[in-house]
Image (cartoon, rainbow, N blue to C red; front, side):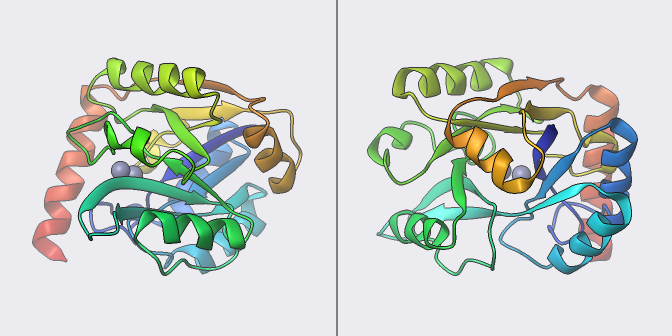
Length: 222
Ligand SMILES: [Zn+2]
Ligand SMILES: [Zn+2]
């Protein structure tokens, strides 16, 4: 199964993509599962369930939390995946307990991308409070950030996830994992067992401009 574990919709302040459009894009590209991971919002879940039924694309309920440390300082973006209900915590040790308590997993999004709220060196300090790191993100400003994430995962023997971080439907599927799984439980298991491969393409100038334009439009009209 091909899974893109990091997709935004219009429930994120920086995306205009409808839930329908991201599921249709996934279907067109042969992506079998997508995680909808809006910024601090689970507002798209209901529609995502509906479009999952209509398209046959598996829906991984998720959210991209702007996580903080116990002193409320911003730590960075973390992906909460395979959730059964929205999460309330933002502080990482609590957030991890909450996500694990409902059978989900926490993956540190674009950990070394310092332009986009990567957790950076603090990943070491918080080892044990997340399950995985994102080893490919098609939004990364530099492939070196992802290479660093893969090296780190290798060194610490951590599971990996990957995603497009799509903010426009055209980008869905540009970051993905491939796993021998037929359902969400199987997919989660393969991730935690480190039996997935990671693939992707970085977005070109066209998509960068399109995402930027959408961001600007949204800023004006929302
Ligand atoms: Zn992010
Ligand atoms: Zn994101």
